[in-house]
Image 1 (cartoon, rainbow, N blue to C red):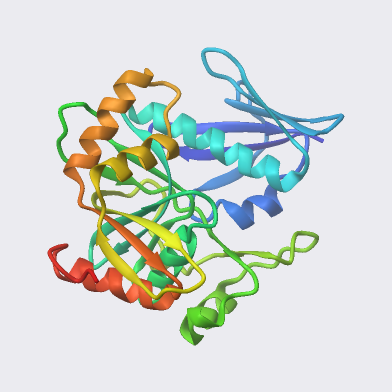
Image 2: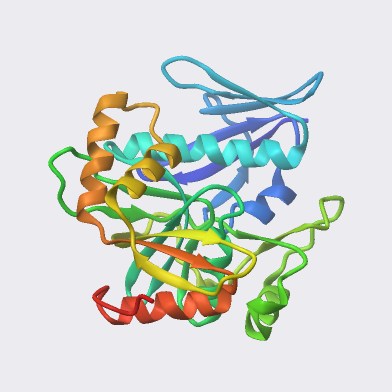
Length: 294
């Protein structure tokens, strides 16, 4: 049976045609990215079919982009990656940043970094403290230009992931927040949970917000919590590692990343306790990014 889906886009809709039902895994991952199953699609941007190894995803762009996945969960994640790429290319001079994000007292804070750095945990901690979750793992930022200028984030509203078991140091408020919003995941890893914040707790798909700060999370086992200004070289290195913009020439992306690192306030956050780390981020925002480090 063929399943067809339409997803919101900056200009119109994106179409996905799939040889397998994605509804359950989309409920887990897509969050507030609006989508609906439809009767049929003639020219979908993305096609999914079963393959010998699992699933084959095909993105129709200037040249077909394909991706193999072993299971339905990864096929859905790959579909969202492709939809994010299409969104970014519609917007123009924007890049995808591998980052969690939250809107704290009206200020968009991004936590870029590698896997297990604590990006999702910090964004969720701030949501548990009454702030707005921006989304998990993917944040579009731009306009990217070498001459600098104000940078905004475009939020995709994707549900957050949290690794289990939760560290007791995360606090009872965080544990209760996650437990009340955790989605059932039958057949998937018991080491991972998806969290769907309530409507008033999460920014909708497509919301644009000036990027107020880049905070590099560095989770550690002990040593306390420390927040301090980050050298521009560290931000540049991380941005180039965690940016994705296949529609941009590498030299132009490097120049634009340097401009972002110069314009946006930048900090490094080392922490062994995510609750205390989130409180320090909150303090930093309320200081106007002038103090609150330590």
